[in-house]
Length: 612
Image 1 (cartoon, rainbow, N blue to C red):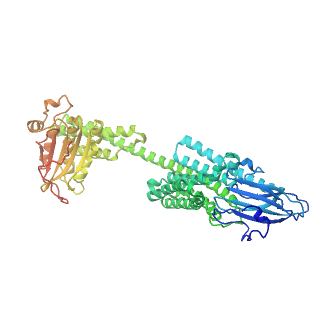
Image 2 (cartoon, one colour):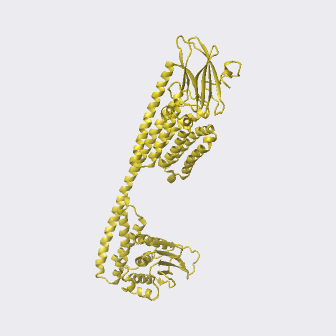
Image 3 (tube, one colour):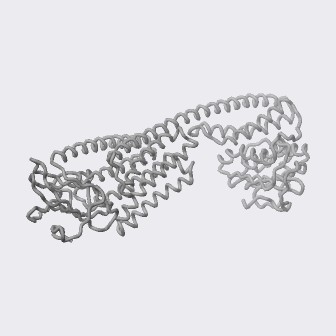
């Protein structure tokens, strides 16, 4: 159709609008409107036709005089730059003249890829100017506040280098651009010469709002750690928004805009739900986050109601609500970040204080052990072989303990494996207490740890020393747990593992537990020079060392002798595997270990160690 088809009232069948605002949903049709005007004022001549929208793909406004003459007031397409507008205003305005008492017909034809809902009015010069002043004052106040918050977020990002500030700044920037585009200021000031981009700017800005909003929720709430299901939902929103953009950008941009209007509300509802779930266990940490997204839920729902469902709010203009709610939203997000970091700072201080107390306690225990070690060393000069055994047994765990504590004090934050420290401390404290009290070997009691706990303790105690020498230390528990004389087994196994680490230059050491008939067997395998036959029997002799080992490492010749004596006192036997081509395999057979849950019995003639 053309404007001439509507000049004759009988030429085209017209229907009155059902409401004050033309709204035909999302349609590809070009909409034609006709209004009969009569100037009933006494002096007003200059008028403004005001379309309350920043942009449509096509809009033409005609004024048909009483004599049938047609005057084109406005004719814009998606290729028209901002400079093509007759009045420099962020929204579409067309001036015209109509003298007092004069009648005319106003014809409007427009098409929009977005919603067809566009409010329109005829204003005097003064009334339009008054509306523009109020609108501009609100907009620039909003822009100024948002820019200040964005700058503060950028400064915080540069100083603290935390990703949550990047997501926060990105979200605020997307919101600012989205509102500027909706009000027309973006086309007026940011990209006035790119009308085709302006046609799709709402898609870019709206998608950015949802993507950065999701990233903010992910980083602030730490969903990957605390809420894995919600984490996947937020990632799905990001991927879904981008996928819809890519697929529908060229194929059906009108459907794309319609879906994004709905998805904005869906996304914000998801952000609120994520906050509420987190608030169940971390309310103080996420309370302002919940408040901020609850505030942003109001404009999101109003926006969807207006452009998605066609519900017009008469008590407040949508953009006034959006501006107010988004300022509150931005401030609440800032408070949320500040509150979270304040909470984390207090928590970190408390953890640091607790860690300092723990370090002090460990240092005191270490000092006590050092004193006890000095006392035992002094007594060793006066006592016989049993005291020498104690000194020998203390040397390796003391070295492992010092290594663990040295790593703890040098590492950032002073953190180390508490199991390594506790195993060494417990073993040494029991050893010192027994020797100073001159007690005999104790029988296993119900309060003592079982086989698994003893072997884990040995692995923890020697882990740092093995790592320092570049060796792997592995524990394989191939048999169920059972009761045992824990202290005696720890002394025997510690001596074997200490020797394995001392004489192994490269490779690894393996500690294994397996069934041995009705009893158990502990095995220590290494990739060192090996120890079978005559060499093994010689190594069992007290104060005797193999000639080959003298240049490899320092030693006293007590390790295997002490281990054999303790094993003999407990009814155990120590043997060496004769079939190893490389490395040593020493086995402790425990026929008297307490009964435990019996699994499938391994064949006795097959060592548990894998290929070293």
